[in-house]
Image 1 (cartoon, one colour):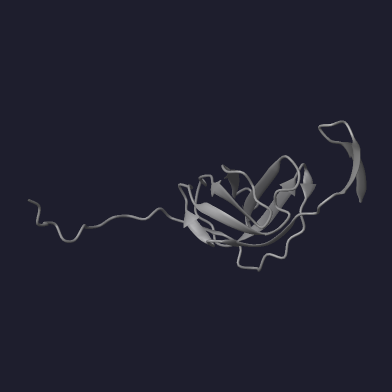
Image 2 (cartoon, rainbow, N blue to C red):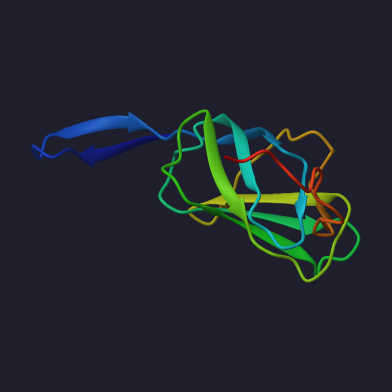
Length: 131
């Protein structure tokens, strides 16, 4: 689709709308407390102004994790940070929108799993050589 826009010099130029495509993301799991840096890989991921990514439990649609883009989105790779979840879930459905429009994706069926927060049982060694 072609659009006419005016650049900073108020000259009319034609530009093609770039359609984003989400190809994959990693890692595929993170803790229930959130904070996982999720790397999205695809094409034209920086198109549009407002991007939203939600990972919804494949079994219970009431469970979901949103992902906040904390850095400038780049064309082929963008990073977001997951929010917390009320409880763990295994596998998810990916919902990626840019400016309110659903972005097509070819994400493998691995989804994203939300795991219980890790528990530290011991720190070994308990002593060290410090001078």
